[in-house]
Image (tube, rainbow, N blue to C red; front, side, top):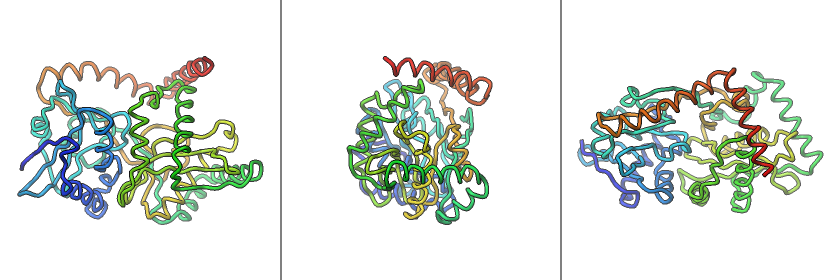
Length: 364
């Protein structure tokens, strides 16, 4: 086994094709979780144009590329999953049956530690480093949109009736409702970013779009159009005006939901829920198997989902002083955050406090 480590610009066209082929065949070869667009070469290359330290380890056996491991590295040898904190799927993209030694991989990459927060299922060599496992809800549309809607009606009849009725009222009160699954107008993307940024501030969360590199990343991905990967902007209009929008990433089989938001002036019509139903219909029409709503407990995700995937967080480390120091710093923070999120009696007050802080920030 030979491991080569490359900068994004050094990755050959043949290696990119091999990486894409592994993803395209993943569902046929027993590893459907590897089809997520966050694991695609296009996502890693886009991050590499916006951030320093991006590298790709390519594992070869008898001259054939059999695995790809993208990561970000600091000058102190601390490794992070590509887009840590942003990406919803992380790990090694590999051929069926391939196994690797995590510490050998770390040594070859010059890493003392590799940290992840959305490790996909099936990454058995990394499981010793898992510190927490979490549900990532999905909407299955492989049997078609009507089959999904029928299941939703059966499981949550009140929710389904209410959401569809709100869509009709939006159409009646504010003009014709039109859904565009693949909107190419960059002005609408800017509108979505503005909505999302305001939502982060309003709810007391850190505003991701206050970081220019994240704005650049989203804009780059919006303009990325490959047969097996694209940035997808979906928009719900009422009387020609956008009222809800979503930007995510699509591979052959998966639509990864990423940045949904809506105009608060239309909140009573639940335009975000209406949008997600339309997105499910549009994705089914494209031959997508499922929409990955991403890790995180949200009421709308529980209402829309058909099942859960599992993702993990943690780190793989070598015996190295830098690794010990990084774990000592990060472990208490992660443990506290996950305890608050997993316990309603703690999460409720914390969430209300964040919103109060957000309200103060929004008035400034």
